[in-house]
Amino acid sequence: MTRTILWPLAGVVLGGVIHLAVILSLPSLAANAAWTRVETLDALGKPVVLPAIAAGEANPLRLDPELTYAVCRMDLRQGAGIVHGVLPLAFWSVAVYGRTGTILYSTTNRDGIGQNLELGIFNQAQTRLLAQQQLDIAEGLLIVESRDDDVFVVVRLAPPHQAMRKRYEAALRKISCGTIPA
Image (cartoon, rainbow, N blue to C red; front, side, top):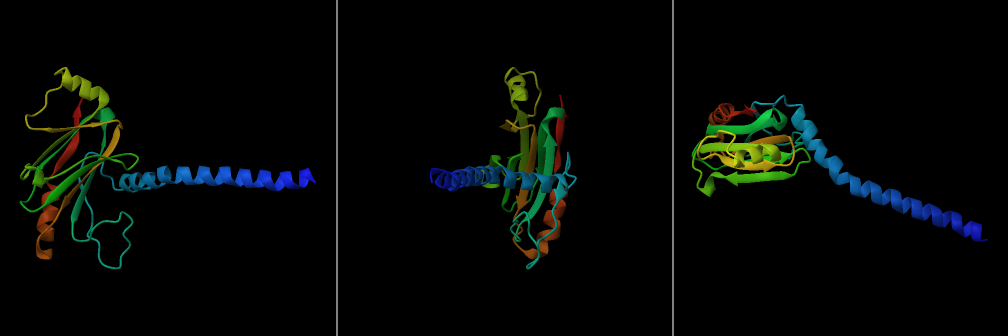
């Protein structure tokens, strides 16, 4: 009799353990999906302007169809990352993401930056070199420290009118993005 009760109880406990393991692993698997999609863009060390999303089309990255986007992927093992360019006067934002999809840094032009985007991304070792003044960087560079060596940067522009979209996409193509050799 006790054996009959023990088998279902063991099954329920094992099912609970498996259920918890799956639920706890889903966030890490979902975050890697964004990294995998960014890797397919061939955006290592250069900006890639994403095509506009039309109504009814698939939108796997969940992009806002009103904005224009550029993505740049960086490998900080090759050197500190840098993104710079002059952007239109309309609203823009920039965000740095780690490999897990976590936002490491985000800002907008409404933070008093104006049109000039000057962003440096450093891993922890490079940040120590920067603190010891062993890295030469431009004045006014926004500094972001990353625990990850694999990061990607997303720059978003908000064209005030749909007719200006091509001009904004051209501005995104002019952004410089890459690494400062160590």
